[in-house]
Image 1 (tube, rainbow, N blue to C red):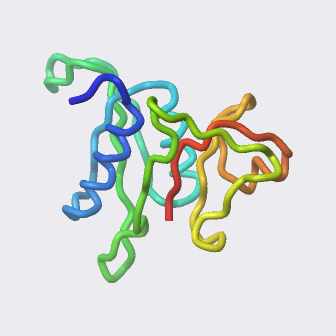
Image 2: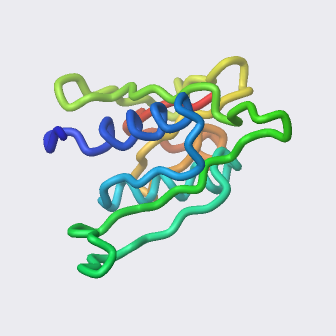
Length: 137
C-alpha cells in the first residue's frame, strides 16, 4: 500500500470494490478521506459510512473508514466511475470561474477549498476555487 497518496489509495479501493460487487469497503483514515467520504454520502453515491478506531479484538490496527456501497434495485452500482485528477506530482487548481462540470452535470467534481471539501455546484454558488481532487459519475 502506498503511503505517499492516501486519497488515490482510497479512490482505488472504492473503485475496485464496486467492480467486484462488494457491499462494504474499508479505507485508511485521514481528514481528507473523511471529507471526501462525507461528500459521497451527501451526494448519495454510498449508503452510509462509519469511522472505526483501533480495536485489537476485531484485528483493526489503524483508524479506518468503513463504507456501505450503494447499488440500484437491479444490482448495478450507483457510482459508474471515480477518478483522481490532482496528484502529488501534478496539482490541479481551478478558479471559481473555471470549475469544470462532470459529464454534463450528471456527475460531480470534488473540490478542496479554503472552506472545506465540497462539490462543484456548491463551490460555484460560494464563488470559491481550490484543488480539483477527483471527479465522480
